[in-house]
Image 1 (cartoon, rainbow, N blue to C red):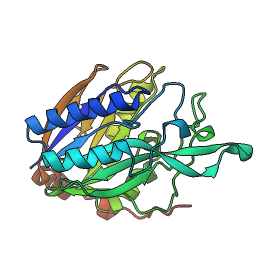
Image 2 (image 1 turned 90 degrees about the vertical axis):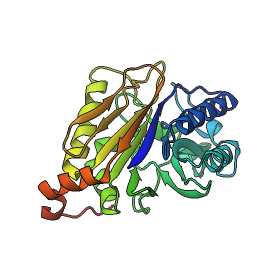
Image 3 (image 1 turned 30 degrees about the horizontal axis):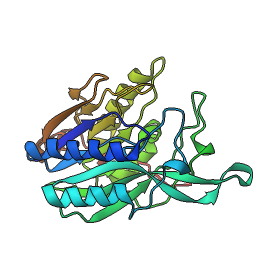
Image 4 (image 1 turned 180 degrees about the vertical axis):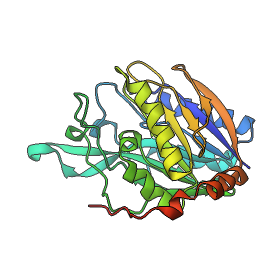
Length: 270
């Protein structure tokens, strides 16, 4: 059994205040002896009108350093969204952009990996690529082994691209984790829930969408089992919830529905 705490938190553009918030989330996870804490996209700093290089911190900066220290202190692994400095100039040779990233830190405090968001949110009237550069599509998927389960990561808008999830599952993920700041709007909450359910069913994985709370985003964190049953669904308010994941239940669904074995196509990045 692997115990996961979902931290549906409100994030501001005050990085120091966000670090206090993350410390509280670790305390909540430790109080219930969680093995893994999951924070949303942009947990280090967020502004509803856009995130870019001004929010970026390096991997040895205050946010990730704090994650590593708290993970080691509490013996709790963590997946958390942050913004890293980019390497490329912006459109038309503009200023350098940031990178939307999720870091994985294991229970010893070691940085286990980084996922750089591949699909930037250039949709619904927003252009994330003006402020952020995409991660390489052919990068190795980010997975983190916690207990008897392997957790794989995609981020927010990636959820709309089923190939992203399938590639993580091909890398061994039993649980698909989707940190997000899912922008609010007509039908957006319905899309979020439906897409998480689809990714869970088609990949026979547990899908955990961890949404950010606050103005302009939906919250509504959701856990969907590999059989499509919704096991957890939050509203818009900031809150912590903890769930226990049983690898035996996942294995039973995969025996009954061997769709991963039956498929005839592979995912090839372009």
